[in-house]
Length: 237
View 1: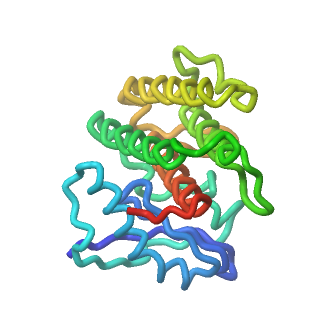
View 2: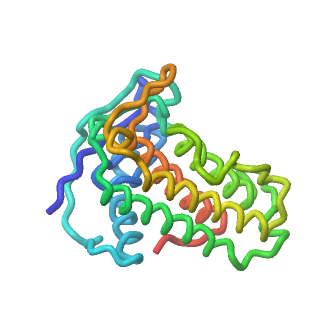
View 3: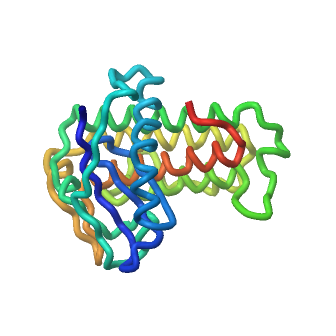
């Protein structure tokens, strides 16, 4: 049996809640209340384990699991949405080069799954606007832009002047560009110094560490991979 410590963020009334599972960096669960988010967490953990297994990781999605709430934050800004201001105890743990490689690989798997979902869409389906929710292309633009901003926090990314005017690019150029940007980001993450992998960086009200950056990169991409599946009515593996 595996025990997973959970870190929750919600408002003081415990309405909209996001559950973070640092032991499975990138895994989250959401709910309109704390109780519903916690009810969804075991299934969210198993879905994340299935994702890892599908890509060759040695995990068992059917293992017996147990969860416990290690911390619930109910004061702050943007709670329940993946607040950029929160720092959990696990975020302060230094990253090793092996950790970076593991999490970079995980991010690449998520991006590959996203692109596989949309590969066969027509151009109309690619840009179709809905009454609610974003077009597929806008989801990918949002994910790519956010990932760039996370890595850029640690300084300039060699080979990139910026994320680029993605909304003006044709489909093929856009896909090639976001792949290039991600590879430059990965190179930057792999080049982190010992200090960058272990020491907090404080800018304004925001404290970031290398592990927190990796957590938010993975959680954000995982969240929008689920959005794409819902958008396209595709079940998770």
